[in-house]
Amino acid sequence: MKFDALIIGGGRSGSAAGRALLSRGLHVCVVADGLHLGVDGADPYAHLNALAREGATVLRGDRALRGIWEEGRLRAVQTVKLEDEPIEASVFVLATGKFFSRGLLSDMERVYEPVFGADVSFLSGRSNWYAADFFAPQPFLDFGVQTDPEGHVLFGGVPCPNLYAVGGILAKGAAAADPARISLSTQD
Image 1: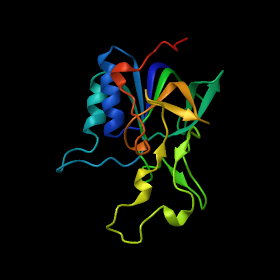
Image 2: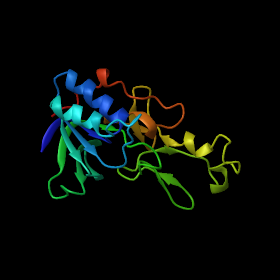
Image 3: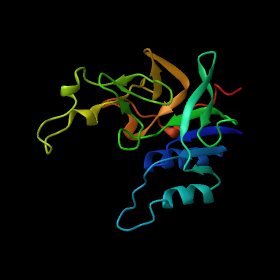
């Protein structure tokens, strides 16, 4: 399968990015795994249903596993349900959220982004990740993926030209991509 844009994450930020890209006339796919909460009793999938009605391909209940790279840029993504059929795109938007939606994971020593292995900002020393007072500001909420000023995801400090990030996955102070300005100039 090939699309102009692949959104990884079907929450509010991913859906907003999808709508913005659809409004530009792009062929958009959204990989939407995880918990979606409704507001005031609303359908928690209303934003995904709207995207589908507007022309996006929405893969509900699927999860991105890994990226397929070619010459320093992302070419395709493999998913759980379509592992044998990678989803190709010209641009990709990472909108997976943080810990509760599995956009960030941790082990005893590090916090990491599990799909691509992007650069993640976090404090060293696990005891620095949280405040003992449950109601105090929690440091882990500031952890997230690092980006350049245009919202390109960083790998070893180097931006990937066709992978952007939006929403909760971002580290505190990281720049979110503006879907209206995402460039398809890296297109094949």
